[in-house]
Amino acid sequence: MFKGFTSRTDEFFMAIRFNNNMQFFHENHDWYEEAVREPLKALAADLGPAVELLDPRLERRPQRVVSRINRDIRFSNDKSPYRDYMWISFRPPHSEQSGVLGLYFDISATGSSYGMGIYDENRPLMNGLRRLLAADAGPFLEAARPALNEFTLCGRAFKRMKIPPSLPEAARPWYSLRGFWIEKDLSRADISTPALVDEISRGIGLMTPLYRFIQDIEPIDEASLT
Image (tube, rainbow, N blue to C red; front, side):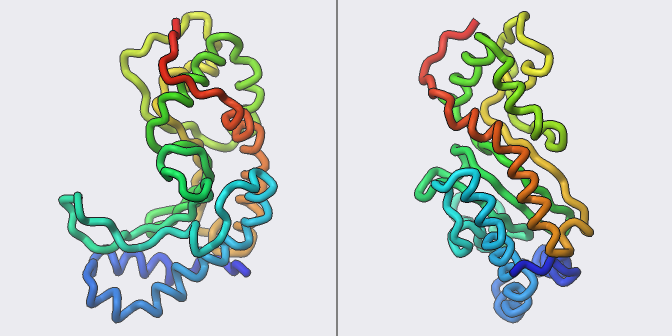
């Protein structure tokens, strides 16, 4: 059962940032397990019912959805072996994580947030969304409205994509996106008690209409958009 993150969670992330080496990590592995990994696994387990209600196809097993702290340094100029942040990611099993729709929670010493989206580019899906928006943006905006009352839209856009002049103002930020995520920031107090489970479960409920709308979009490889 999730009991909340403590000041020791923040302290570990700060410590690993300034002592990012194998010796420090191995000497403080018990601290990492107690203050970071175990609370994340407990939170993931307690969020399982809300995630299953949204989409039973999403991976929910805590040992699979909690990120690793080890960094893949093979192709990175930064050879620091450990992250100073972690996350929970509820996505379809065996999927390319960054390009599919899913839910997430992230935490670091500087803050926490949760949300839903497609972090990397998914052009066929966004082409499908563009076609729907150009035809009639109303159903999409209605599906997105509950979430956007509390969550902020984020994403990278095509800089030179022409937006149809007839598109409603509320739909225009979505039209040229390569991918998207909607996110809500959490305070230190928010993540310090078991009530975090209720907050994220409530947020999943707000995101459900948008999630299901996006899931029903037919991807288009080469869209002809005007």
